[in-house]
Length: 320
Image (cartoon, rainbow, N blue to C red; front, side):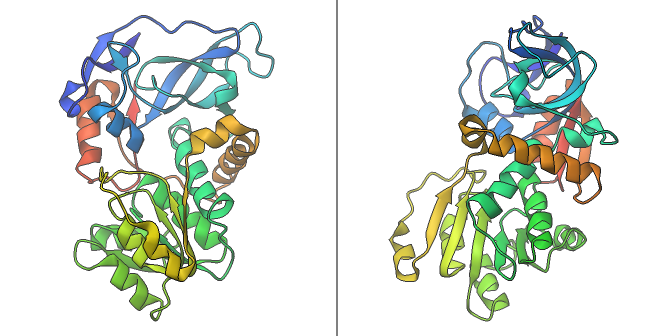
């Protein structure tokens, strides 16, 4: 099979298209013929400096396609079914071998390209808002990086739940497009201090919940909080590892929850069933997947560079 691989971590140009051995079939797994690959933020971070379990390494958390083979111990999947799958690595390829329990059936009528973008982004956003963020109708939420995959999902889910939704983005154009997805108030972080803007938009009170997938924004997210406000901290896309003094939360009885969907998927059935529900709601047009661009697998380096330049509005997808 062909795959986008690298022999050392670094900038997008470490990626190259090569012939590599096909994945082996595990008794509890399936082999999926990949038709769409959603590039996740973690994919670019891993390519930049993450672990490499093998050399050459195939990066990638998520893809969708058609089951080609089924392991001997698998009873709930069959050849020919369309699925979306998550994995620790390996999605940037024509074939993936994955545990059957890490796949979701794609509902009738849902395009595979859209399905490829759902589990991580929408599952993470839902957990940030409700499972850990405890958002309820009438509250106010600030979504960092509103034009990203988790951001676009969180805006829609929060608005549907009856919240007032604020979000940050790097341009007025992106914020205008987010209004169509339920955004109430946009903050252009390139032109104003987002924490000050969030307080002004809430008449000085602050927001009840922040969904922060950026990391370098964490201090500002803390400054944005209302009394007893919460932060769902879900990533470090800003690549900022400086220590943060959380003592500033004490005076307002505020809190931060770290959120990692992978741990929830490993812990039990709740998160898996939640993603099944979200796939159904997207198939029913209750929620929208936004895809900015697709690239051929051979152009994986260009696709990663496009994401890292923060040009995308929504997801960037590779097609083998």
